[in-house]
Image (cartoon, rainbow, N blue to C red; front, side, top):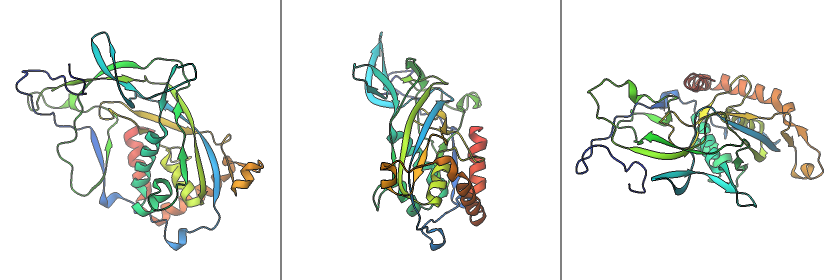
Amino acid sequence: MELFKGSSFSGSSDQKSPSPIEKNYFFIYDNEHPQIDLLQDKYSREETYYGKLFLSITALQDIFIGSGEIDRRATQLYDVFSYVLTGSGKKTWNIPGSSLKGCIFTHLSMFLKTRSTDFLSAKEGPAKVFFSDLPMISETEALPKEIRARFSPKAVPENVILKLYKKKYQNDSLPQGKYPSETGVEIIQAIQTDNRFEGQLHFKQLDEFQIALLVLALGNFPGNSFNFKIGGAKNRTMGLVRLEIDFEKSFYSHTLNDISIKKIFPFESLKPNLEKTLSQLKQDFPALDPIIKKIQKEYRQ
């Protein structure tokens, strides 16, 4: 077996079957996008906040986030799940903060014009949102799992802004004899359903519009929550998670100095303002609510 994923092919060694046609995606189109622009004057707020959100992520499907390493069990090679090492050298399975940040940026891109995502992406200015790693808190092992080799979709419709992943694997429902058979398998190390990870998000100098959209993108805005997918193998019935914010434990302040002297407020107390802010955005941008409902429908929040 070669070291690279998707390299173990069925059939003749001198002729590989063409890749299966993927049906495991859905799309956000130009005409669905809310095109929210927070740089308009009416959304400019002088008052900004600093804060810390305590996050937990629960696996609703098996998940895979690769570390870049390859290991062996018996005669099988597999891609290793992301981990951090404790002081004793023990592995703790881990969702990197960069992986979560990538998901949240995708979600913001469903709602906002590109230039309005800069408070997260920091392409033009200083970074304002920081994600910690999220180590797993439950005691369990990541186990090797065999999946069908992954392929990109063969055709993407016109006017697509974003490609997202269906909750369940679709290819098994294809008509028999019409599409090629499986062309290969991958062995990955997966964390099983119901395991939990915990971490934090720090933000600085965000106004209420930015905070409201950040919480919405995290999938845990009261009354507008949704599950989402993270990591690899999302097109193989993997990666669905539920993110929750501990609103009571999380906090905010008006200045950085306030945090240092413990002049902080429970994030819970910001919720009425954030709900009013989101309501205003839904009125100003009627396409926002349908996008939220589209994600909720696919991921069954």
